[in-house]
Amino acid sequence: MELISQHTKKIMEGCKERARDAGLRFDNETLEYIVTNRDMLELSPKIMIPTLYDYWVQDVEVLKEKGRYELYPGNPYETVINTRPAISFYNDNNPDWLNVMIFYHVLAHIDFFQNNTFFRHTWDFDLTGRALADKRLLARLRSEKGRWVDYVIEFSRGIDNLVGYFDELSQLHRPTSGGCSRRLDYYFDVFLQQLKKVRTSQYVKEIDRFNECLRRYGELGEQTFFADTAVKYPEFEALFEKSSRVAKGRKRDLLQFLMDHSEFLNKEENKWMKTVMEVVRKTSIYFQPQIRTKIMNEGWASYWHEKLFMRDERIRGHEIEFARAHAGVTALPRVGMNPYALGMRLFYFIEEMADKGKLSYDFQRLHDVRKRESYNRKVGAGLKTIFEVRENLCDFMLVNSFVDQDFVNKNNLFIADRRINPARMTWEVYVKSRKAEDYRQMLLDSLYHPPWIEIDEEASADGTLKLVHRFEGKPLVAEYIANTMLGIEFLWGGPVQLETSEVESEAPDEMNSGAAAFWSTSLPATPELPKELKWKRILYEMKGRRLSRTLLVPFTPSAS
Image (cartoon, rainbow, N blue to C red; front, side):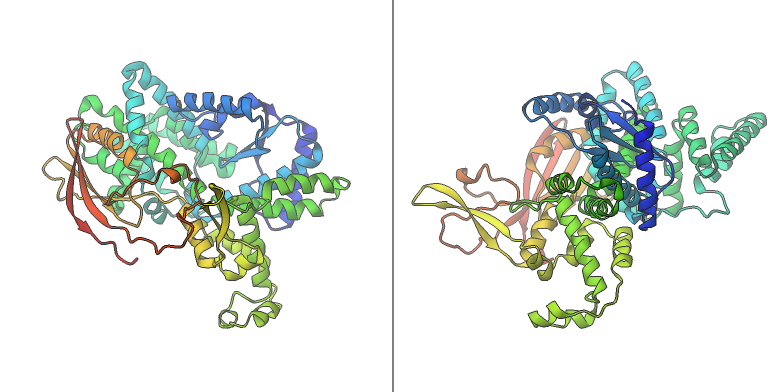
């Protein structure tokens, strides 16, 4: 791994100027690295962050990716991570014209990271510095505690999709430029004076260190200061987060509840486990917005790499190569979903609708197809609107708001199904629906949506942790329940109960066992009315590493 050459860096700086002129906003400082195929394979399980903490699953993923690469060699054009400064990785054999396209794509990603509201908890956070401090901390704990560190990581990662991301986001307010942040106030007023009780001389040295960081690094001074602090006091961040929760009375997620209330974890000899759990939790929260904005993020980057590339005079003579590479990225598949293609077309669609004034109540009242097609108030608000969409929406909001019948018709979208052909005794594919509501529901079903698990604190007063799954139309994945509850039992130090909903079992359809995502089955070929599913409430209990299952009552989900 090495930095890109000065020649390639000059190309990148030229792309930055053109991107800013088009309206994109991002920090001046960026880092670009050239990586080999081996680097890509080894860094991918760590989300391309070399300083991320080590875990045995990452080694398994490396071996799996090496085997896949031997069968199907190929790497992505680029990978960019949301750090300060933003870091991006590139193949070592890209020609200059392709780098122009890729750099525009990367800069649009960086613009999205640094301006979308769902990423605002990452704007003032030094991920690489914190990750390195966490990695060293876990390495030290491994030397002292051995394999138990990996057990705690595994048990914590089993529930790290239940972190209170939206609760954290709703409580976050960026500090005003004229004052000090809450983290800074807590460090100097509470952590150093009340908890560490440092001497006056040491306190003054910390003030001098902070002022020196401000002088040397300017706007990044506070981030640099706390990156060094994380190395010196690795427990600081967890204590600061806990104080914020107590002060604001915010709702706690499952990992926080375990750290605060588990008698097992709060024993003196086990308190180190809470540090490991906080590392897993903070890492999960940091990456939550990326999985919730996949369509928007890739669509935004594809939109701008196409628009800016075609304006760039440096690519003259390479239009055909660009068209081939661009089509490979943004082609719309007939079956399934390509986030690059779908997101890019949605941004073009929104821009056109806003330019013509179609994002209005008057247009929505029109039902005549010809009048809807010819409607044009020449408002010219397209570019402004897509920047507002980029700033304020996530995938769910984008799909729910803009995937309508006009968009489905414009892009010739449909849902594909498959059925058996009795004459040939083979599967055949057919168009099941071209309705916008069906296509939109298919997209919504594919989005990331972790289960809603609540803690019944009243029922947990007797030493048994009671968890309640609030049913939202999807059952829990049955094969994960036992191992996940085993991990929670270990961290809680006592029995764990989980109340959830399951569908009444029916005879399995062996012919459909290999159906892929986005494919449903309709057997036999003659249409049948869909069967109404019957649900029941189930109580699982993990006690003494043994799982029991009890039927509670029949359950009828609400219409919502």
